Image 1 (tube, one colour):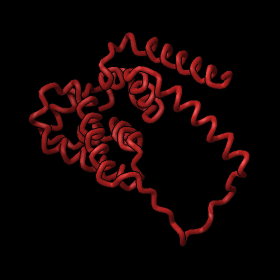
Image 2 (cartoon, rainbow, N blue to C red):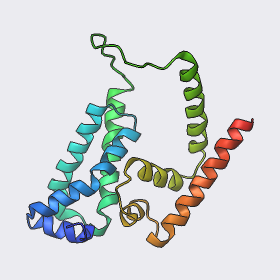
Image 3 (cartoon, rainbow, N blue to C red):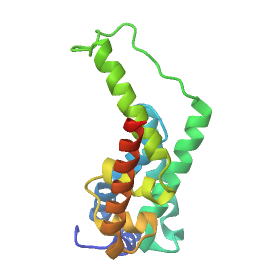
Length: 182
């Protein structure tokens, strides 16, 4: 099943081929998880978004006009649902007051340094183009995706994806370094 394209998998899934469904899920679950977690959702809410997306796919499978663009359809559906959930839930972060304390909790110095690095990285990341941010998110959060899946999800020709990703990383690296020198 791994050698089949998304379009072929959709055709088979429409015919109730369970192996095709399993391959669609295997291939795209990291993408959905990435879209949900990138929206800032907690683990349980991200799982709900994934479940919602799979349910929507099962209900809409026969209406998908371009089966080859399944990855993009799934990402868009998951992203939209994640944004809806985030809006409803707000940015609440529950804390387990009754659970055991974190083991090996970093000291204040480590927390400050990590926080500063993260701020620099995300500030630089925010200055990238939408296309670069999307490519780097997919590569980071869904490393098992093929170049074809990532290219289809972001609308870049497969042959250009590697060089585009390299340019995006180089720009990010330069911008982070510029942050350090300021």
